[in-house]
Image 1 (cartoon, rainbow, N blue to C red):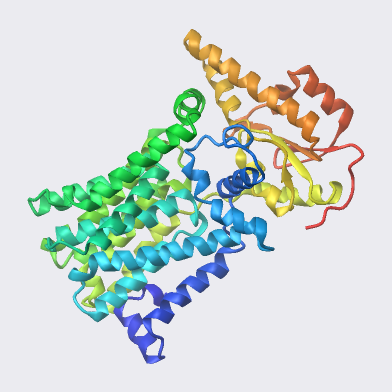
Image 2 (image 1 turned 135 degrees about the vertical axis):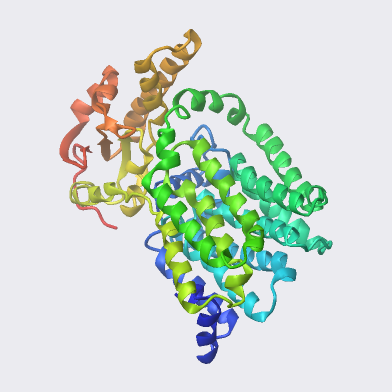
Length: 511
């Protein structure tokens, strides 16, 4: 709690002789230790697998298939490379890399806020608040694409907040270019992240009745980086603009949570209540200063709109909204300068927990499959699955120190295509595309079974959370049915997943 305990907590830290640089190091070291056993999740695990396939000579989109834009994969390539040449797992380098980015983002944010930080006390408090929000608060969403995007966007929102509070002087050119590069990188990860940036900048321009900030070199650099990235991606990976959008539009994008859940779910209302309580405590005594936190709150609104637009309801997609909402009250003058009584500071932090809880994802229950697989499969097993859920195979395959025996992470496209065919109402073109997708993924499964000869086959019993017979789906291809009947035996069923092992490949697996 010292890291977010405000000026009073820093007084204690000074008494024990802990300078600010060491407090930053303590936060980063604590997060490193916490995240090493936790950071691996289904998305990160799969993206690292794609990187490793590319490092082994595979081609993105052919030997390693990922529907998200290329940067989603390439941003983890340095960690995957280090993991391939050094005797340290790649996810350890991911943690280290993201912590370095969090520290750099904190430094840039402080530089952007420097003119409006009243004194050394405010600057020290802001340092701890920002670093804790960027490194510790993400928790189980640590190192996700949304986390990296937040690290890039926070300096820009700080820039807008400083401008909105009256600091309209031209900053150092190097600072403005760096802030623009960071924001541009964030928007390259997902175009949705333009919303937090745009709303915060527009508010700053409105409050100062000046469009100077909108045409600053910061915005030009960010825009140029986004345009340059998409031009390069179009040249290097044209399928991401011609083929994949059609697949996703038909099979993935229509699978959404109800709008009522996204807007009024219990976790959303809990987070909103926590935010309003924080604002009431930090700004309630200075009603005229509520606008100081507006750029952060509008960035949070942009993050929330991004979450709603994507429509999946995943915990990691809430991170931008939660982080900006948390920073809004905590970076107000009342909190940073110590004008709040200690009791009110504790209330602010308690209310902030509601925002943090909003980020907590559902645990990956498929890790329990490790035990029967270790007992029945050989060491370093080749694993394949039949499911729309990439979380069934990742990070399980990494926990088993195994190998993923396919170019794709799941049969997600087939799951969506089957659902669309069941709903009906498709045009002739879309109906044909859905059938082509199903045929394509069955063909890939058949080839994977014959050529890659996986040791373990996992067959799910749900599709997008609802009962579905993936076993029957696979056996609709006679060659797959023949392969299963002659070369695999059923082992057991855990968490609704049937585990099949290759006959003649039985032995104790080693980590």
